[in-house]
Length: 204
Ligand SMILES: [Zn+2]
Ligand SMILES: [Zn+2]
Image 1: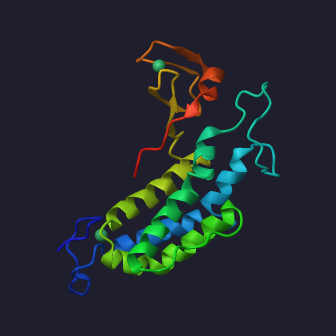
Image 2: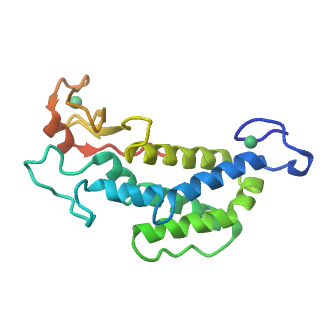
Image 3: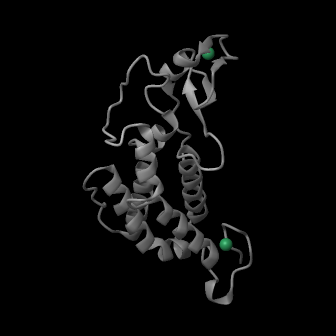
Protein backbone atom coordinates (compact mmCIF):
# COMPACT_ATOMS: atom_id res chain seq x y z
CA UNK A 1 0.00 0.00 0.00
CA UNK A 2 1.41 3.35 -1.04
CA UNK A 3 0.39 6.98 -0.66
CA UNK A 4 -1.49 8.10 -3.78
CA UNK A 5 0.26 11.49 -3.64
CA UNK A 6 3.94 10.72 -3.04
CA UNK A 7 3.83 6.97 -3.76
CA UNK A 8 5.84 6.07 -0.69
CA UNK A 9 4.84 3.09 1.43
CA UNK A 10 2.24 3.85 4.05
CA UNK A 11 2.89 3.19 7.73
CA UNK A 12 0.92 0.42 9.39
CA UNK A 13 -1.52 2.85 10.97
CA UNK A 14 -2.12 4.50 7.59
CA UNK A 15 -2.89 1.34 5.64
CA UNK A 16 -5.96 1.77 3.46
CA UNK A 17 -5.58 5.55 3.50
CA UNK A 18 -5.28 7.59 0.33
CA UNK A 19 -2.42 9.71 1.59
CA UNK A 20 0.38 9.59 4.14
CA UNK A 21 0.61 12.06 7.01
CA UNK A 22 3.37 14.26 5.52
CA UNK A 23 1.35 14.67 2.31
CA UNK A 24 -1.77 15.50 4.32
CA UNK A 25 0.21 18.06 6.31
CA UNK A 26 1.52 19.61 3.10
CA UNK A 27 -2.01 20.02 1.74
CA UNK A 28 -3.06 21.59 5.04
CA UNK A 29 -0.13 24.02 4.81
CA UNK A 30 -1.05 24.98 1.23
CA UNK A 31 -4.67 25.56 2.20
CA UNK A 32 -3.60 27.74 5.12
CA UNK A 33 -1.32 29.77 2.85
CA UNK A 34 -4.29 30.74 0.68
CA UNK A 35 -6.63 31.99 3.41
CA UNK A 36 -6.70 34.87 5.86
CA UNK A 37 -6.16 38.61 5.80
CA UNK A 38 -2.47 38.20 4.98
CA UNK A 39 -2.90 35.05 2.89
CA UNK A 40 -2.25 34.63 -0.82
CA UNK A 41 -5.87 35.20 -1.79
CA UNK A 42 -5.93 38.58 -0.01
CA UNK A 43 -2.62 39.51 -1.65
CA UNK A 44 -4.03 38.58 -5.07
CA UNK A 45 -6.91 41.00 -4.60
CA UNK A 46 -4.45 43.72 -3.60
CA UNK A 47 -2.29 43.10 -6.66
CA UNK A 48 -5.29 43.38 -9.00
CA UNK A 49 -5.19 47.13 -8.87
CA UNK A 50 -1.57 48.16 -8.47
CA UNK A 51 -1.34 51.65 -7.07
CA UNK A 52 -4.83 51.48 -5.63
CA UNK A 53 -5.35 50.29 -2.11
CA UNK A 54 -9.14 50.44 -2.29
CA UNK A 55 -9.25 47.30 -4.41
CA UNK A 56 -12.74 47.92 -5.73
CA UNK A 57 -14.18 45.67 -8.42
CA UNK A 58 -13.47 48.07 -11.28
CA UNK A 59 -13.19 45.79 -14.27
CA UNK A 60 -12.92 48.31 -17.07
CA UNK A 61 -9.94 50.57 -16.65
CA UNK A 62 -8.54 53.50 -18.52
CA UNK A 63 -7.77 52.90 -22.18
CA UNK A 64 -4.52 54.78 -21.77
CA UNK A 65 -3.21 52.28 -19.25
CA UNK A 66 -0.99 49.58 -20.73
CA UNK A 67 -3.28 47.01 -19.10
CA UNK A 68 -6.71 47.67 -17.67
CA UNK A 69 -6.24 44.91 -15.17
CA UNK A 70 -3.61 42.36 -14.37
CA UNK A 71 -5.14 39.24 -15.86
CA UNK A 72 -3.24 36.56 -13.99
CA UNK A 73 -4.38 37.74 -10.57
CA UNK A 74 -7.85 38.34 -11.99
CA UNK A 75 -8.32 34.82 -13.26
CA UNK A 76 -7.35 33.47 -9.85
CA UNK A 77 -9.17 36.01 -7.73
CA UNK A 78 -12.44 36.23 -9.66
CA UNK A 79 -15.34 33.86 -9.39
CA UNK A 80 -14.23 30.75 -11.24
CA UNK A 81 -10.77 31.04 -9.71
CA UNK A 82 -9.45 29.91 -6.36
CA UNK A 83 -12.68 30.34 -4.41
CA UNK A 84 -14.80 28.42 -6.90
CA UNK A 85 -12.29 25.60 -7.14
CA UNK A 86 -12.17 25.22 -3.35
CA UNK A 87 -15.96 25.40 -3.09
CA UNK A 88 -16.36 22.77 -5.80
CA UNK A 89 -14.21 20.38 -3.78
CA UNK A 90 -16.14 21.17 -0.61
CA UNK A 91 -19.47 20.45 -2.33
CA UNK A 92 -18.03 17.17 -3.57
CA UNK A 93 -16.90 16.19 -0.07
CA UNK A 94 -20.23 17.15 1.48
CA UNK A 95 -22.00 15.05 -1.16
CA UNK A 96 -19.85 12.02 -0.44
CA UNK A 97 -20.39 12.42 3.30
CA UNK A 98 -24.12 12.89 2.86
CA UNK A 99 -23.93 16.38 4.38
CA UNK A 100 -26.06 19.31 3.29
CA UNK A 101 -24.79 21.55 0.52
CA UNK A 102 -22.46 24.12 2.16
CA UNK A 103 -23.61 27.74 2.29
CA UNK A 104 -21.50 30.61 0.99
CA UNK A 105 -21.67 33.84 2.96
CA UNK A 106 -20.04 37.20 2.45
CA UNK A 107 -17.61 38.42 -0.17
CA UNK A 108 -15.12 36.26 -2.03
CA UNK A 109 -12.43 36.71 0.62
CA UNK A 110 -14.82 35.54 3.33
CA UNK A 111 -15.96 32.65 1.15
CA UNK A 112 -12.35 31.71 0.56
CA UNK A 113 -11.67 31.66 4.30
CA UNK A 114 -14.83 29.64 4.98
CA UNK A 115 -14.04 27.06 2.32
CA UNK A 116 -10.46 26.67 3.55
CA UNK A 117 -11.59 26.33 7.15
CA UNK A 118 -14.14 23.68 6.29
CA UNK A 119 -11.80 21.76 3.97
CA UNK A 120 -9.19 21.69 6.76
CA UNK A 121 -11.74 20.25 9.18
CA UNK A 122 -12.61 17.49 6.72
CA UNK A 123 -9.02 16.98 5.52
CA UNK A 124 -8.27 13.94 7.72
CA UNK A 125 -11.38 12.23 6.38
CA UNK A 126 -10.45 13.08 2.78
CA UNK A 127 -6.86 11.88 3.21
CA UNK A 128 -8.21 8.62 4.51
CA UNK A 129 -11.18 8.00 2.26
CA UNK A 130 -11.48 10.31 -0.75
CA UNK A 131 -10.66 8.47 -3.99
CA UNK A 132 -9.46 11.65 -5.71
CA UNK A 133 -7.36 12.95 -2.82
CA UNK A 134 -4.23 13.00 -4.97
CA UNK A 135 -6.04 15.23 -7.44
CA UNK A 136 -7.13 17.56 -4.63
CA UNK A 137 -3.58 17.69 -3.27
CA UNK A 138 -2.21 18.52 -6.72
CA UNK A 139 -4.80 21.20 -7.36
CA UNK A 140 -4.28 22.94 -4.01
CA UNK A 141 -0.53 22.96 -4.48
CA UNK A 142 -0.95 24.32 -8.00
CA UNK A 143 -3.28 27.07 -6.74
CA UNK A 144 -0.69 28.07 -4.19
CA UNK A 145 2.08 28.15 -6.81
CA UNK A 146 -0.06 30.18 -9.22
CA UNK A 147 -1.08 32.62 -6.50
CA UNK A 148 2.54 33.03 -5.43
CA UNK A 149 3.68 33.71 -8.95
CA UNK A 150 0.77 36.09 -9.66
CA UNK A 151 1.52 38.07 -6.52
CA UNK A 152 5.16 38.49 -7.41
CA UNK A 153 6.50 35.28 -6.03
CA UNK A 154 9.85 34.03 -7.16
CA UNK A 155 8.59 31.70 -9.86
CA UNK A 156 8.15 34.21 -12.66
CA UNK A 157 5.03 35.22 -14.52
CA UNK A 158 2.30 32.65 -14.89
CA UNK A 159 1.22 31.41 -18.30
CA UNK A 160 -2.42 31.60 -19.15
CA UNK A 161 -4.60 31.25 -22.23
CA UNK A 162 -6.62 33.78 -24.17
CA UNK A 163 -8.97 32.86 -27.01
CA UNK A 164 -8.13 34.05 -30.52
CA UNK A 165 -11.03 35.15 -32.75
CA UNK A 166 -10.50 31.83 -34.59
CA UNK A 167 -11.13 30.13 -31.21
CA UNK A 168 -7.57 28.83 -30.89
CA UNK A 169 -6.01 29.29 -27.44
CA UNK A 170 -2.96 31.54 -27.26
CA UNK A 171 -0.58 30.98 -24.36
CA UNK A 172 0.69 34.24 -22.97
CA UNK A 173 2.04 35.76 -19.80
CA UNK A 174 1.27 39.08 -18.23
CA UNK A 175 4.48 40.33 -19.86
CA UNK A 176 3.83 39.19 -23.43
CA UNK A 177 4.50 42.09 -25.84
CA UNK A 178 2.24 40.54 -28.49
CA UNK A 179 1.46 37.20 -30.08
CA UNK A 180 1.03 35.54 -33.46
CA UNK A 181 -1.74 32.92 -33.79
CA UNK A 182 -0.33 29.84 -35.50
CA UNK A 183 -3.84 28.62 -36.32
CA UNK A 184 -5.22 31.59 -38.29
CA UNK A 185 -2.21 33.85 -38.70
CA UNK A 186 -3.67 36.77 -36.76
CA UNK A 187 -1.10 39.10 -35.24
CA UNK A 188 -1.93 40.78 -31.93
CA UNK A 189 -0.12 43.66 -30.36
CA UNK A 190 -0.05 43.88 -26.62
CA UNK A 191 -3.26 45.86 -26.20
CA UNK A 192 -5.22 43.69 -28.64
CA UNK A 193 -3.92 40.59 -26.94
CA UNK A 194 -5.21 41.62 -23.56
CA UNK A 195 -8.58 42.56 -25.04
CA UNK A 196 -9.16 38.89 -25.92
CA UNK A 197 -11.20 36.71 -23.62
CA UNK A 198 -9.55 34.45 -21.12
CA UNK A 199 -9.63 30.85 -22.32
CA UNK A 200 -11.72 28.42 -20.32
CA UNK A 201 -9.84 26.81 -17.54
CA UNK A 202 -9.04 23.19 -18.35
CA UNK A 203 -11.79 20.95 -16.98
CA UNK A 204 -10.78 19.40 -13.68
ZN1 LIG B 1 2.50 10.80 0.74
ZN1 LIG C 1 -6.30 32.44 -34.46
